Length: 123
Image (cartoon, rainbow, N blue to C red; front, top):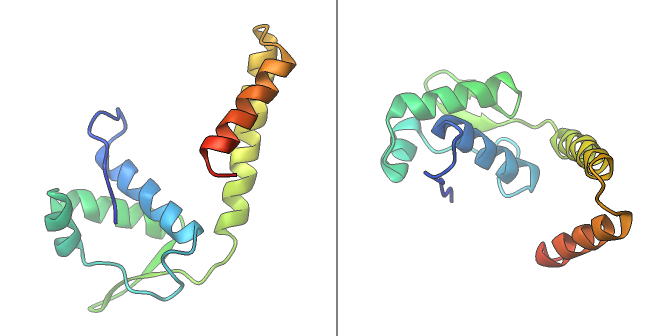
């Protein structure tokens, strides 16, 4: 379900958060579906349970999951995550495109880069 990149400079808990965010946004994890337990996921990923707990805490703070005492963590029913993520990616892309143009990358090269990325991404 989740594959971590130990070469990544980001902390492991941030990678866990990002992976779950994407699973939720893509609809792989459905609203009100129960998350794996902290202990089970920690064993599966060979991580300290505190790392998983920290990731789950951040996901809960961000509204992606909610917890029920004694029952576990569940996927939130809020459906705006995909739209919010798209807006964020659009802003990031726009900033990157502006920076690319500012440093002299030609528009046609930039368009070719986007087309190449879209083809690699299956679009």
